[in-house]
Image (cartoon, rainbow, N blue to C red; front, top):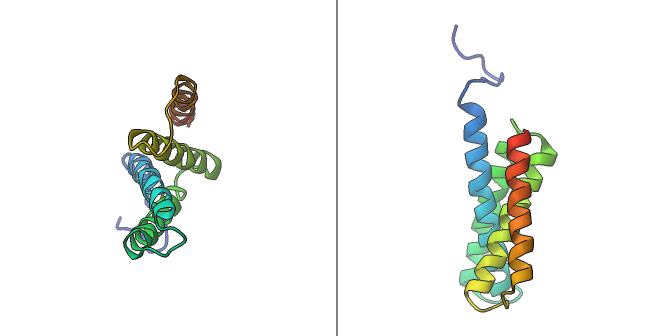
Length: 120
């Protein structure tokens, strides 16, 4: 039987696609957060445009993933990925000092994100 309009078609790969989209959206969250900081209150055009595009695509991806994944899990994973990558980028570029304690806490966030995926 063919696809029925308006009815979600579940399949073995659908959940995997949602996770992939969610991870990519989390990466884009780090992009837009970094661009927002560099836009200096939207006074710099290039980072402001990067912010806007990354924000829209990141939110669209999060919304897509939430069609198959629970809101709490999807949001926590999205925020976790974005937060970790934003801090790692800031430490790598020297915008934020690195410390062993920060790295340990970032590792805990990563472990929590993996745990949420495994528990899903």
